[in-house]
Image (cartoon, rainbow, N blue to C red; front, side):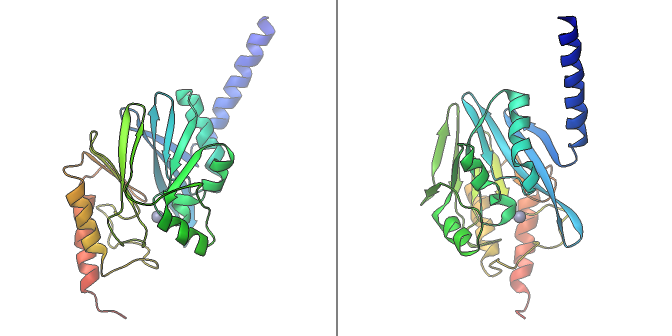
Amino acid sequence: MKTITLLSAFLLSCFFSFAQTTTSKLKITPLTGDFYIYTTYNDYEGSRIPANGMYLVTTNGVVLFDTPWDTTQFQPLLDSIKLKHNKTVTLCIATHWHSDRTEGLAYYKQQGIKTYTTALTDELSKKNNKKRAEFLIKRDTLFTTDQYSFETYYPGEGHTADNIIIWFKKEKILYGGCLIKGVDAVNLGYLGDANPAEYETTLKRVAKKCAAPKFIIISHSDWNNINSLKHSIQLAKELKKKPKK
Ligand SMILES: [Zn+2]
Protein backbone atom coordinates (compact mmCIF):
# COMPACT_ATOMS: atom_id res chain seq x y z
CA MET A 1 0.00 0.00 0.00
CA LYS A 2 2.80 2.34 0.96
CA THR A 3 4.52 1.65 -2.36
CA ILE A 4 1.40 2.65 -4.22
CA THR A 5 1.13 5.89 -2.27
CA LEU A 6 4.77 6.71 -2.94
CA LEU A 7 4.33 5.83 -6.57
CA SER A 8 1.30 8.08 -6.96
CA ALA A 9 3.13 10.88 -5.14
CA PHE A 10 6.00 10.43 -7.58
CA LEU A 11 3.66 10.45 -10.57
CA LEU A 12 1.89 13.49 -9.22
CA SER A 13 5.15 15.40 -8.82
CA CYS A 14 6.10 14.39 -12.39
CA PHE A 15 2.79 15.71 -13.58
CA PHE A 16 3.22 19.04 -11.83
CA SER A 17 6.77 19.55 -13.07
CA PHE A 18 5.47 18.72 -16.54
CA ALA A 19 2.63 21.18 -16.08
CA GLN A 20 5.12 23.83 -15.03
CA THR A 21 7.24 23.44 -18.13
CA THR A 22 4.17 23.91 -20.28
CA THR A 23 2.96 27.07 -18.54
CA SER A 24 4.76 29.19 -21.09
CA LYS A 25 2.43 27.83 -23.78
CA LEU A 26 -0.80 28.24 -21.84
CA LYS A 27 -1.43 30.81 -19.13
CA ILE A 28 -4.60 30.95 -17.03
CA THR A 29 -5.29 34.07 -14.96
CA PRO A 30 -8.29 34.62 -12.66
CA LEU A 31 -10.29 37.69 -13.67
CA THR A 32 -13.11 38.00 -11.14
CA GLY A 33 -15.43 35.47 -9.50
CA ASP A 34 -15.94 32.56 -11.89
CA PHE A 35 -14.28 34.31 -14.85
CA TYR A 36 -10.79 33.36 -16.05
CA ILE A 37 -8.57 34.56 -18.90
CA TYR A 38 -6.55 31.98 -20.82
CA THR A 39 -3.66 32.95 -23.06
CA THR A 40 -1.87 31.03 -25.80
CA TYR A 41 0.85 32.29 -28.14
CA ASN A 42 1.80 32.20 -31.79
CA ASP A 43 4.54 33.62 -33.96
CA TYR A 44 3.40 36.43 -36.16
CA GLU A 45 5.87 38.28 -38.39
CA GLY A 46 8.78 37.21 -36.19
CA SER A 47 7.29 38.14 -32.80
CA ARG A 48 5.63 35.96 -30.21
CA ILE A 49 2.08 37.33 -29.93
CA PRO A 50 -0.26 36.43 -27.05
CA ALA A 51 -3.93 35.71 -27.75
CA ASN A 52 -6.39 35.96 -24.86
CA GLY A 53 -9.65 34.11 -24.56
CA MET A 54 -11.93 33.75 -21.54
CA TYR A 55 -13.85 31.03 -19.75
CA LEU A 56 -16.67 31.09 -17.24
CA VAL A 57 -17.23 28.37 -14.66
CA THR A 58 -20.94 27.71 -14.06
CA THR A 59 -22.64 25.09 -11.88
CA ASN A 60 -23.01 22.51 -14.63
CA GLY A 61 -20.16 23.28 -16.99
CA VAL A 62 -17.64 25.71 -18.35
CA VAL A 63 -18.31 28.19 -21.15
CA LEU A 64 -15.38 29.00 -23.42
CA PHE A 65 -15.10 32.29 -25.26
CA ASP A 66 -13.00 31.81 -28.40
CA THR A 67 -10.47 28.98 -28.78
CA PRO A 68 -6.69 28.83 -28.28
CA TRP A 69 -4.66 30.22 -31.17
CA ASP A 70 -1.90 27.66 -30.56
CA THR A 71 -3.15 24.37 -32.03
CA THR A 72 -1.14 22.32 -29.49
CA GLN A 73 -3.14 23.82 -26.60
CA PHE A 74 -6.73 22.75 -27.42
CA GLN A 75 -6.61 19.69 -25.15
CA PRO A 76 -4.25 21.16 -22.50
CA LEU A 77 -6.79 23.93 -21.97
CA LEU A 78 -9.59 21.38 -21.40
CA ASP A 79 -7.30 19.37 -19.10
CA SER A 80 -6.29 22.44 -17.08
CA ILE A 81 -9.93 23.44 -16.64
CA LYS A 82 -10.85 19.91 -15.53
CA LEU A 83 -7.95 19.81 -13.07
CA LYS A 84 -8.58 23.28 -11.65
CA HIS A 85 -12.38 23.23 -11.41
CA ASN A 86 -13.32 19.56 -11.85
CA LYS A 87 -15.71 20.54 -14.63
CA THR A 88 -15.93 19.99 -18.36
CA VAL A 89 -16.38 22.58 -21.09
CA THR A 90 -19.89 22.38 -22.49
CA LEU A 91 -20.15 25.42 -24.76
CA CYS A 92 -17.78 27.49 -26.92
CA ILE A 93 -18.46 30.72 -28.84
CA ALA A 94 -16.00 32.27 -31.30
CA THR A 95 -16.20 36.03 -31.90
CA HIS A 96 -14.96 36.33 -35.51
CA TRP A 97 -13.59 34.15 -38.27
CA HIS A 98 -9.80 34.65 -37.82
CA SER A 99 -7.71 31.66 -36.63
CA ASP A 100 -6.87 33.21 -33.26
CA ARG A 101 -10.58 32.86 -32.39
CA THR A 102 -11.84 29.84 -34.38
CA GLU A 103 -8.91 27.43 -34.77
CA GLY A 104 -10.15 24.98 -32.10
CA LEU A 105 -13.82 24.85 -33.16
CA ALA A 106 -13.64 21.54 -35.07
CA TYR A 107 -11.62 19.87 -32.30
CA TYR A 108 -14.02 21.04 -29.60
CA LYS A 109 -17.01 19.90 -31.62
CA GLN A 110 -15.37 16.44 -31.79
CA GLN A 111 -15.09 16.48 -27.99
CA GLY A 112 -18.86 16.96 -27.70
CA ILE A 113 -18.71 20.67 -26.90
CA LYS A 114 -21.52 22.78 -28.36
CA THR A 115 -19.73 25.24 -30.66
CA TYR A 116 -21.28 28.51 -31.84
CA THR A 117 -20.56 31.40 -34.19
CA THR A 118 -22.81 33.85 -35.96
CA ALA A 119 -24.08 32.90 -39.42
CA LEU A 120 -21.94 35.69 -40.89
CA THR A 121 -18.80 34.32 -39.20
CA ASP A 122 -19.64 30.89 -40.58
CA GLU A 123 -20.00 32.30 -44.09
CA LEU A 124 -16.58 33.97 -43.87
CA SER A 125 -14.97 30.92 -42.22
CA LYS A 126 -16.22 28.74 -45.05
CA LYS A 127 -14.97 31.21 -47.66
CA ASN A 128 -11.53 31.45 -46.02
CA ASN A 129 -11.12 27.74 -45.19
CA LYS A 130 -11.26 28.23 -41.42
CA LYS A 131 -12.71 25.89 -38.81
CA ARG A 132 -16.48 26.16 -38.40
CA ALA A 133 -18.93 25.84 -35.51
CA GLU A 134 -21.77 23.35 -35.29
CA PHE A 135 -24.47 25.85 -34.29
CA LEU A 136 -25.16 29.26 -35.82
CA ILE A 137 -26.75 32.32 -34.29
CA LYS A 138 -28.57 34.57 -36.73
CA ARG A 139 -29.03 37.64 -34.55
CA ASP A 140 -27.85 39.07 -31.23
CA THR A 141 -28.60 36.36 -28.70
CA LEU A 142 -29.01 36.16 -24.95
CA PHE A 143 -27.45 32.98 -23.58
CA THR A 144 -28.42 31.79 -20.12
CA THR A 145 -26.39 29.05 -18.54
CA ASP A 146 -27.10 28.17 -14.92
CA GLN A 147 -26.60 31.29 -12.81
CA TYR A 148 -25.14 33.44 -15.61
CA SER A 149 -26.39 35.22 -18.72
CA PHE A 150 -24.55 37.02 -21.44
CA GLU A 151 -25.45 38.68 -24.67
CA THR A 152 -23.76 38.48 -28.05
CA TYR A 153 -23.78 41.83 -29.86
CA TYR A 154 -22.87 42.65 -33.44
CA PRO A 155 -21.90 46.34 -33.54
CA GLY A 156 -21.05 46.52 -37.26
CA GLU A 157 -17.84 46.13 -39.24
CA GLY A 158 -14.47 46.97 -37.71
CA HIS A 159 -11.54 44.56 -37.28
CA THR A 160 -13.50 42.22 -39.60
CA ALA A 161 -16.97 42.31 -41.18
CA ASP A 162 -18.34 39.82 -38.64
CA ASN A 163 -16.75 40.76 -35.27
CA ILE A 164 -19.08 40.44 -32.29
CA ILE A 165 -18.56 41.35 -28.66
CA ILE A 166 -19.98 39.63 -25.60
CA TRP A 167 -21.57 41.63 -22.81
CA PHE A 168 -22.14 40.45 -19.26
CA LYS A 169 -24.58 43.11 -18.16
CA LYS A 170 -24.77 42.08 -14.51
CA GLU A 171 -21.02 41.62 -14.00
CA LYS A 172 -20.24 44.52 -16.38
CA ILE A 173 -17.65 42.55 -18.30
CA LEU A 174 -17.14 43.52 -21.90
CA TYR A 175 -15.45 40.77 -23.89
CA GLY A 176 -14.20 42.74 -26.88
CA GLY A 177 -12.00 40.23 -28.73
CA CYS A 178 -9.83 41.66 -31.51
CA LEU A 179 -12.08 44.67 -32.14
CA ILE A 180 -10.60 46.57 -29.18
CA LYS A 181 -6.85 47.19 -28.80
CA GLY A 182 -4.80 47.91 -25.68
CA VAL A 183 -4.02 51.39 -24.34
CA ASP A 184 -0.41 50.99 -25.50
CA ALA A 185 -1.39 50.18 -29.10
CA VAL A 186 -0.15 52.68 -31.68
CA ASN A 187 -2.60 51.47 -34.30
CA LEU A 188 -5.51 49.07 -34.69
CA GLY A 189 -3.28 46.16 -35.68
CA TYR A 190 -3.92 43.91 -38.65
CA LEU A 191 -6.32 45.70 -40.98
CA GLY A 192 -6.28 43.33 -43.95
CA ASP A 193 -9.93 42.41 -43.40
CA ALA A 194 -10.98 45.61 -41.63
CA ASN A 195 -13.39 48.38 -42.50
CA PRO A 196 -11.48 51.62 -41.74
CA ALA A 197 -14.47 53.81 -42.68
CA GLU A 198 -16.83 52.09 -40.22
CA TYR A 199 -14.43 51.16 -37.39
CA GLU A 200 -15.03 54.28 -35.28
CA THR A 201 -18.84 54.11 -35.57
CA THR A 202 -18.75 50.41 -34.69
CA LEU A 203 -16.66 51.03 -31.55
CA LYS A 204 -18.98 53.86 -30.50
CA ARG A 205 -21.91 51.44 -30.73
CA VAL A 206 -20.02 49.11 -28.37
CA ALA A 207 -19.43 51.99 -25.94
CA LYS A 208 -23.13 52.85 -26.04
CA LYS A 209 -24.28 49.27 -25.58
CA CYS A 210 -21.88 48.41 -22.76
CA ALA A 211 -22.32 51.17 -20.22
CA ALA A 212 -19.60 51.59 -17.57
CA PRO A 213 -17.81 48.26 -17.97
CA LYS A 214 -15.70 47.12 -15.02
CA PHE A 215 -13.51 44.95 -17.25
CA ILE A 216 -12.72 45.13 -20.96
CA ILE A 217 -11.12 41.92 -22.23
CA ILE A 218 -9.06 42.29 -25.38
CA SER A 219 -7.29 39.69 -27.52
CA HIS A 220 -3.69 40.73 -27.88
CA SER A 221 -2.61 42.78 -24.87
CA ASP A 222 -3.25 43.38 -21.19
CA TRP A 223 -6.86 43.76 -20.12
CA ASN A 224 -6.04 45.69 -16.98
CA ASN A 225 -6.71 49.15 -18.33
CA ILE A 226 -10.32 50.17 -18.73
CA ASN A 227 -9.39 52.96 -21.20
CA SER A 228 -8.75 50.50 -24.04
CA LEU A 229 -12.10 51.18 -25.71
CA LYS A 230 -11.70 54.96 -25.51
CA HIS A 231 -8.16 54.67 -26.89
CA SER A 232 -9.35 52.40 -29.73
CA ILE A 233 -12.07 54.90 -30.66
CA GLN A 234 -9.33 57.55 -30.92
CA LEU A 235 -7.20 55.26 -33.13
CA ALA A 236 -10.23 54.50 -35.32
CA LYS A 237 -10.93 58.23 -35.67
CA GLU A 238 -7.34 58.78 -36.88
CA LEU A 239 -7.62 55.78 -39.21
CA LYS A 240 -10.70 57.25 -40.87
CA LYS A 241 -8.86 60.54 -41.49
CA LYS A 242 -5.92 58.83 -43.21
CA PRO A 243 -5.96 59.26 -46.98
CA LYS A 244 -6.72 56.04 -48.84
CA LYS A 245 -3.78 54.56 -50.69
ZN1 LIG B 1 -6.99 38.64 -33.34
